[in-house]
Length: 206
Figure 1 (cartoon, rainbow, N blue to C red):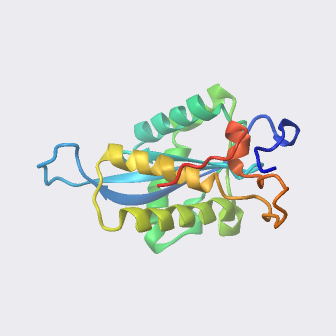
Figure 2: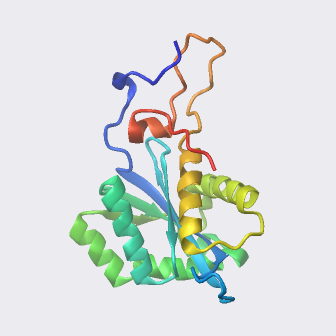
Figure 3: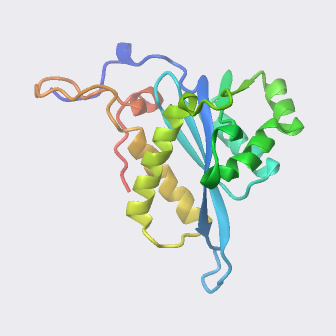
């Protein structure tokens, strides 16, 4: 009978203990005022659990230390404090990924490193000239962008609309099976990253 996985298969008990972290964007957004013609830039922070491949997406309003620190605090409040964070090194990318130069400086800033030290978080940067270290979160960024483009197309959303859509995309990413689906109708549902977050499959789709 199809159903949720038994609890003894839900391991580990603490997702997001060791995570990969990356920035993506920018995407054009607009203020909440309907008649405003002003456009803004928003960014995405993607957190990937190395153990479960669970994904957490955050929309960030600008590329500043304050905005990223707020993003990191939201992640910790909702997903618990990681023990280790691995993030990209800007020297791995060129051209379109120049945003990582600013992102790299933010991560290495005294405020972020002091916050990490106070929280007991070990912060590591992947070695220069070795982008394959970040392959897991790069793959998730590609999947996130693919869904975003299919759903939003050319529409310009405000910050709340984009945040809502990203939460739904997060649910899609966390609903992907971690193992092949069996052809036996009596087998249980496949294990997904969502099982490690809610003990059941997440089925929210945009």
